[in-house]
Length: 416
Image (tube, rainbow, N blue to C red; front, side, top):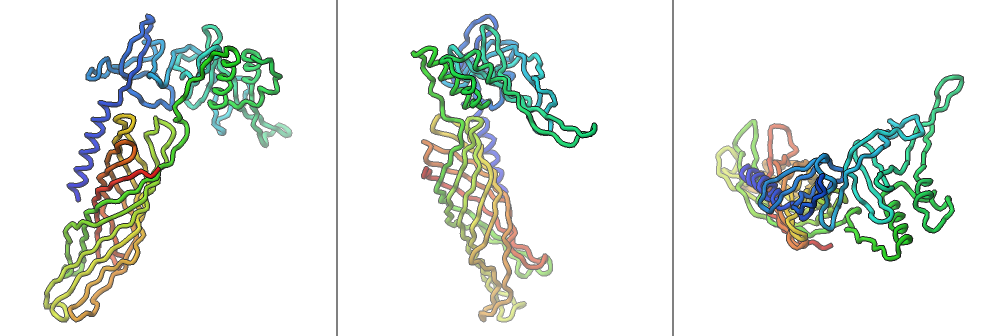
């Protein structure tokens, strides 16, 4: 089993190395002289705004870096785009316990890469990082923050502070009303707009269509919601069992690996961030292990005994998967799982030759850990090599040990 773990770790390392060679996609950057340079950019998903990016000039070229100070913008074709901007940004905290007592924005001058959300007569940008989430619009050559700020209002009685409430500065409603009122709507219609990416994107797109009927709203990749997957996971497990006693080694025995069928149903929640590379998994699985050994000895009545192991259980692995895309439909993945175990109709017995029971063990449902590596093709079929750490399954006194271990080859068929 140790060899299996070493093999899986080696595969995981080579998988990471392979992924590092294929995660670069077509894109470009514009340098400070205004020159557009087409290249291959490492797609990191960028949940937060970056300060630099990695790229290659050719598929097999060296990995190079560009920092904020060296570029005007960079983009992935049909994907994300960032532009460099010098902005006045409110850096007061959005966290409840750290809210400012000041209603007005607390500006700091920053040079950042803003994410382009909407481009047109009205353009929308976002900065997410350093504990803040801010949206901007462009007026001439200036990037201006849309102001939304929560702040703390303290109440006092006879000079003592006794409670506080939360105030909200929604000045961005007025900014939108003054600068982007294409249909001359009443100001009250703007107060219904929330300070969220989804609502602001919709507003700016509608403004651009109103301002220019020929404006085309870009179709966005649906990447901002979690996806649910259900996968049938039959497989073959190589299981082994070792029983020993610290008092007497008469019944000590190590069973060799035997192949047994296992079947599971994997539910996966694909997270919407980081290009949907992360998933949360749960995989209820039925597995069975059976083995026996016949030994002769004059230390047992009847001159022999049978050590019989029948172990069936419902395992419930829960954990995380990190996926590395080779192409749109093919990927590699690594799983890290915490495995809960619930034994079913199971038994471990030592039986004399006359049929009488020398000892019948009580069984223990104990969790263990699992590590797996695998790949998926055509977003439909997958195969995984999974190693599980040793699990103690005997509940009897501490003088007895029953170690169960398993390495599995798991096939997957995605149902939806």
